[in-house]
Length: 365
Image (cartoon, rainbow, N blue to C red; front, side, top):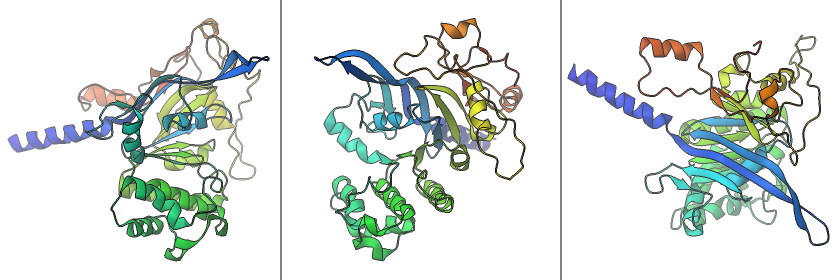
């Protein structure tokens, strides 16, 4: 009995560790000033990211989706400080030495040490590679900086092999490769520092469908082998369904819904998410689908309405939508409720499905 109790407590401990996020983003805001006049005074701000919060867990993939211009890429650049956030916290919890470090306010010396843990795969597989450097130098540059004294050539060749690049490519230049091969170079470069997190900004959007599948499968295999976490940014819902464990939907700088991937087909609750899913083209000719047509104007990110930003296009808007900004609220599903009733969930229940909508519970779906 004592032995069973010990193993039970150990299991709970590891379950708690896995539930703790490796990266926590809280109230992240990125506003770009709009300057006018002779003296270039600030007239207003483009609110590209307007107070979003989410968690990224170890060994998991969070898909970030939304229309073009909703702020997905700005989120990615803000996390690695390629653009300056004006407010919020990005808390790194990946190791015991730098536990609970705010990346946005960390001193440059400490941030330089942390950069090897958070790497980025850029959207354009050609412009993100230096045309004057060989593949070996591109991948090896980060290894040389973050792992001095290591066997650099062996590390480079190992990651080239992991990503499906042949050894003879070591001394070739980016222009000698196809788009899919260039993206593999970008993936190898990002993984060569042995990061805990990889931020992938539309890594397969510029590739053919067959090449997309190969790159996605490589990323999934590497995640299983290296236990790396992905923040996967895309506008393609079929791609995000293939690779993600959770999905966050953005609209005009806000996250309107976060849900497990298995709910993508029929378990979503926000009207915008439903409309986004219905816009995906049918796979087979003649396949009937109910498409949700959104009417109304998309607000400007410089002059968004004070309440819900989706109110100008939402068929279910009510009076509170016009003045009160909705916050993400937990949505318990039947399995979670049944587990709570049976006493299978120990400690505080963390609901993974959250929706920002005033009319949650009154919608017809």
